[in-house]
Image (cartoon, rainbow, N blue to C red; front, side):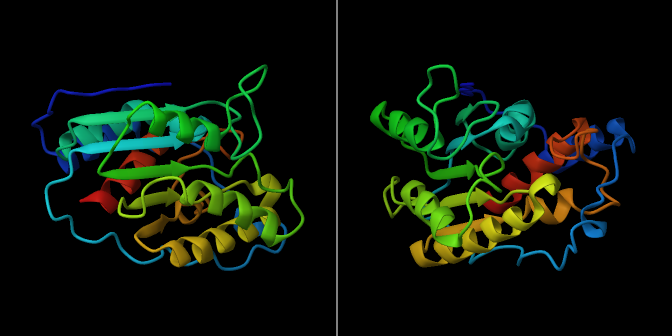
Length: 233
């Protein structure tokens, strides 16, 4: 999915978001993550903080899977309200980090990011929301680390990266392993921060997930968008 936005939305982001959240009400499901598989404390909320920009950030690009795809409309609106006038979002259902050649399966996150860079996408900040479809498919932290490192190394080191961590209650041990490794690798790169979708999605009080306990409902897409936007402003 490609979304390019060139029109600046002048309504206040926080006001618009609150109105949309209110309209969504309390519909959704309660996550039971904290009650299954011996779930312990969540990983730290983030790693570092994006440095203050030397100039106003207006260009944003993101690679993601079905969670990002569901949230693309909300992301475009909220980021537009925050002053981003050039927004590119590439998201596909079932996308994995390194697996996928685009033939009968989604193009992988790594190949998608490579294509975007080759096509001249040059944002002020990159965002990545990958890993949900990879957790539980590898047995050790090094395997996750290698995939994460590959993506983090692709953008110019001067460009900040925001990576949204994952929540998959069906693969909770792998989820926690991935999120821990993600924070270690983000810290090693520098100029990178990790946002905790896990903390929000696993909170029974939030009620932001569909019946599958993985994908965001309508309210959840707005919460996801706000999570990303808050890190950039």
